[in-house]
Image 1 (cartoon, rainbow, N blue to C red):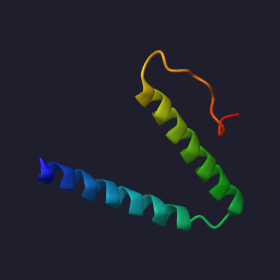
Image 2: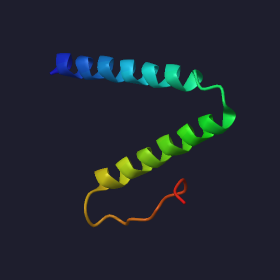
Image 3: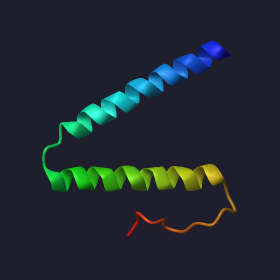
Image 4: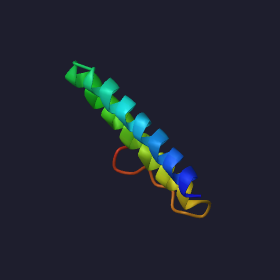
Length: 64
């Protein structure tokens, strides 16, 4: 099982680095803010989905 955890960790690390590299390649401050807001919204959505049915469904601080 530790090997599976290592594989997931390695894959996640690669994805994190890809995301950072892509974000740093965006030079327009407005576009960087749009990407940041989108990432925050997606993270909020994932939190509510993980909470399961019956959890409160409010838009969160990043959603308008």
